[in-house]
Length: 245
Image (cartoon, rainbow, N blue to C red; front, side):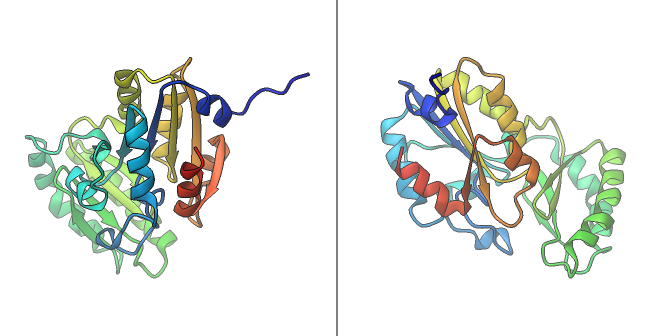
């Protein structure tokens, strides 16, 4: 019996390919604070080569698009920030109304700090003495704030983010990008819980030949690894994979 071709082989054999990526933990190593992040060595060159030869290359991130432009700045690469959330609009009023309550929650955890991303407020707790305990303290407090002010609560790697308005999520963004580009194959690479939404979107886009790549580090959730077609080690492993495609 002839074995079934792997998802990566089916994808590589398609005539029209798309490449979609998370940023932090995927194209960049996880760092102590967001402003310290840099694209992994070789990542910008890999994106540039892909953009020259393929109709769709995009980065879909929880960062604002302006930050992505500073960190990547590669011609031909589409940048979608804030999980597709509109980066301006009346929703800011809801966030401002909740800010004092969010700040009180932050004060529960020494080492936690608040990042104002414009359309969202992100509570980081990576610098807490015990991040697991910090998560247990912050999660119910911020859930209460979100419920009281009509906000969405978005979990990430040692960060809990509150946003107003409709948050499309990575799955909706991926689906729109793939359908708009009309590609016959798509690779998505990510490293966190939010990337499961993107994986699910690819699963629903048959007959597009998709390959789901988990970028593994110490903090990559096991359920993302279990859902992936292929696992690479750290951003350097992803850059190596891209150089071979």
